[in-house]
Image 1 (cartoon, rainbow over the protein chains, first blue to last red):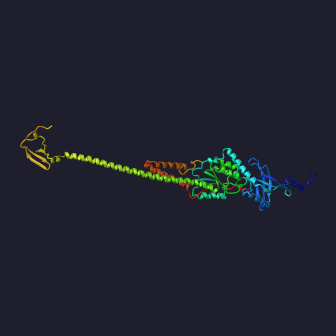
Image 2: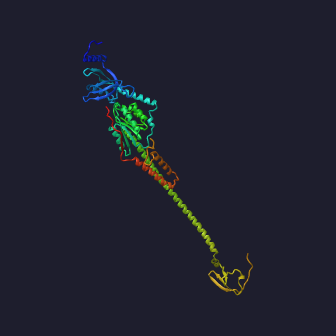
Image 3: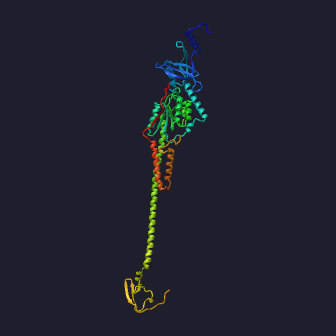
Length: 398
Length: 74
């Protein structure tokens, strides 16, 4: 028990001493970066928070952190040993080492950061990602969006990205340069930093409610921590719940987020994602071209066949007509021959004659004339007038 | 999203247009295509193909902002 009454500075000294004694070698602490500010004097200030399991709830604990400019370079060298995979930013889970100091002048408790453990951040990201993927797999929803069919001609594209970013420009460049009638519905979202995962999920839900054919979710390259919003469960669930197919183009080719795992199709970059949609429409147009060529070829062939059939028919008609004409001629000739055969003149030429009485009646019987009657006999080339002198009757022929 | 929402100008969807063109081709490839129907089929195919191309190929892309910028991140 401290006896007597202390001044404020004396109290401050006791607090500082107690902290030094409790943590003489400093302490490692883990938490999430929040409210990060990079001051123009080179110092970095942020809060290290401990979050509860309840989404959106206030942190259960917070401590202010300062990374002095002089220490920052060492910390940055540590971060770059892992290939710039980590960038300190809001929402990033970190494990840092330092000392807890009490500054009595301002009455402030502050954690003075001196080191960082990059493997914690990277490892936690990997573990968190694996846990989430296992969870979604167990629920049998991991590949649900891949079952949503992409329309034959996906011309209406809902684009979820940070408007004005390089990724935004890349996508528009590819779509505009395709010569196809794309309609782009732009939906802005932050793509990194604290709360980005909530914005992305909300943007995807908004996109799914439009009349778009597909949703493109894109963001350019960055560190692993820059892309971590796309590993968040709310983003994954927004994609899974989407009634439209989601095409992702996140980061560089080597990056693969949980969003990529659950999307209909994951493309390596924003440009590739736009190219994927262009390719679908182009392929459909090529199919149309091939069909057009096949139809014209088939129609020409069918026309040629029809023309051939008509020609055959015409030939058959011609043949038939010729045969009919020949048959008709033959019949005509036959009739002519018969007619000629019955012609009296022809008979006369063969020696037959026709005899008539004076009044012109054809004489068929000796009974029609008497001796002394005048008769006229017609022969082939003329007629003879004579008088009956003798009549002889023969027996009838049957 | 069904092809009923994916309409060409005369209410036919892209998938339906492709199906009809495929049927026309099959008809034209049969040995005994009716000459009277030949011209009708070719005319219908031309109409569908022209309709599709007109809808898909364009000099300009259309861009609409659904959600513009929001408050900048910290």
